[in-house]
Length: 167
Image 1: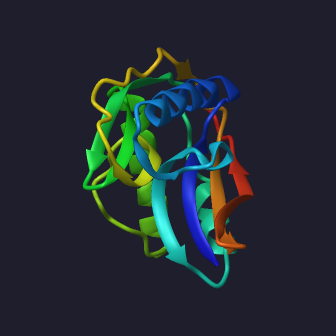
Image 2 (image 1 turned 30 degrees about the vertical axis):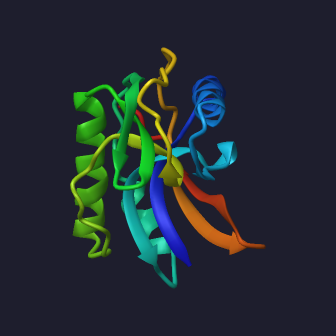
């Protein structure tokens, strides 16, 4: 199964992002828009694993400090359009703790440098630069181990473990 660890978004933040995606569509920006139910922040991409239990065990020891995340603007990685998040040291620390737990458990994961963003459009074309991102923030309640499946040509994400170890 294909796995990743993420922070799910609050309904309020999803509404703000949906508003941004609607503005982009009106501005003529084309591409594969991410379904609202799939919006998230990836903390670590694991990929194919036959068994999720070692990951669940590793995450059970990850401590989470309360913090706020705020949307900050649009950007791109090639033709992938994303909404960024303001720099938040506690988010960076959480990512480090998650990745250290995976390392200690000898669970392989994608080691790309963490960039706090929410992917909103793949294979994007058009002028997105005038689109404003609404002020939106949230305090994450937990992190999730997610399974990703392609069903009828669409990605479906399913939470298989929830970690809410607040300090």
